[in-house]
Length: 352
DNA sequence: AAGGCGGGGTT
DNA sequence: AACCCAGCCTT
Image: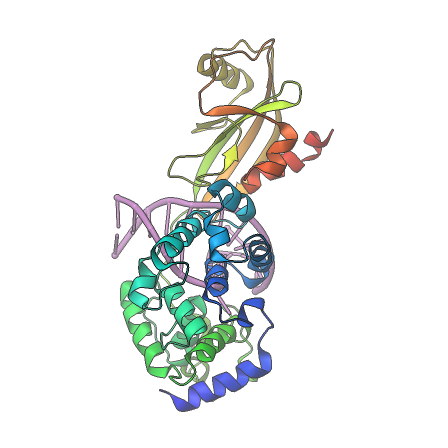
């Protein structure tokens, strides 16, 4: 253990830590819940969702008894929806296989859906004070700078390298606080851009600070290119009723609801859209009108969505069995929908 | 080892 | 526009 590092670190932590609700408990359920929500998610964004889930599901048994639709509805807007689906699977497994009590062996914990090395280490260190170093984006950044390591952090080699170092410097007497401290330090002091190294407690010992390499660490392999997609949403409207369906494919937004979707390689003209809808749905359209266009940005995709309002003399067509009719109002309140769809429902056009 | 998965904040 | 966030799962 690097005594000087962790003592300084924890002293800093006690003076600077944010008051966060999941730090006031050693209840493994609440800690697990917070960790799943916080995966690839900032504290400020995840906090209201954490409060909401704790209110709805005070125990893991309550959560295990929920439906996937209910979980996803509460998860709406947080992104990476597989976390919500896996969370339900995990809760059911803990209730059925472990009598509702989280396992305390890391090997067992890592088998649970949605729990990888980071989350397993976080749960066991925070809830049971076990000595498992956590490795998240913050820790990679702090260690790469402090020790001047330029191994690209998004590689298997980096995981091995940094996991070993994190294990070398962890405070075996207080792994819970040590892990909290190093992540908080990365989030508040050792920030990705323009960290204030002049005010840093490690200003004299950090390799990157001493050698003026802070801007160049950590090293990360380049991200994939973005992909463009064109979505045509068919908004049927009749007596304030519309048609929706659940996304089932292995694609974005799995398990969420949306209008019938026609994805095309390029944007469609009015008559092209009409022809396709008529053949697709065996329906004579009296009117087709593009009522909105929304550009929606995801991390690896840009979605150009056109919303087409269609009206017809009758809606008794042979619709796909997986589409169903709902009140337009209910779509926004009772179903888990992508942010793109809520943007459309909130647009001034739909308000009238 | 690489690809895929959201949404929002910061720079 | 690029980068990042208390990462994980599948192929």
